[in-house]
Amino acid sequence: MATFEELSSEEEVKEEEEANLALMASTDSDADSDDESESDSEVTDEVFSDCSKAQLLTALNKVIEKHLRVLSKQKALQERLNALSEQEGHFQGLYQETLNRVNDFEKGCAVCHKPIDEQELALQQFVHLNFGKSKAANLIYNVMR
Image 1 (spheres, rainbow, N blue to C red):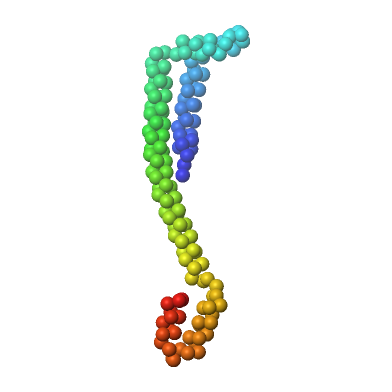
Image 2 (tube, helix red, strand yellow):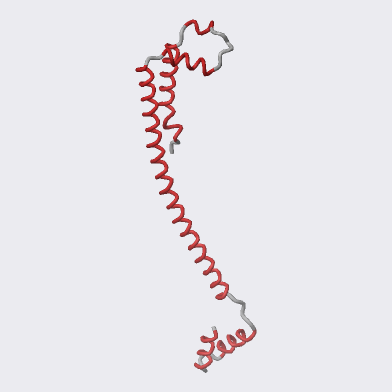
């Protein structure tokens, strides 16, 4: 799945190149001879003061369009995240329910495979020896089991 950065990287590269070209075109060739003591804000003010109103509006419109595209992508990704979170909660509930059922089955198997005590062993021997002789013993054996 492509991340947000991967989706917008090509657009960002193109827009950065256009912005750099516009910035280079708008700066004077004698900008190198300016005093180095000027702050960054003064240099920025000079660059923007050299730009026309139309250039500034065009740049602003590009930034707004990019912002709107990013917002729409963010909204779509947020909706997807919410849907996946709901699915995760559903599957977590199914997993817990299945785990509880497995534990119940294991408890049931422990009762089924309980060790044979002395009395039941004697009863099994009696029934096997006298199987045909007494239906009552057979019934008792089946009830005890």
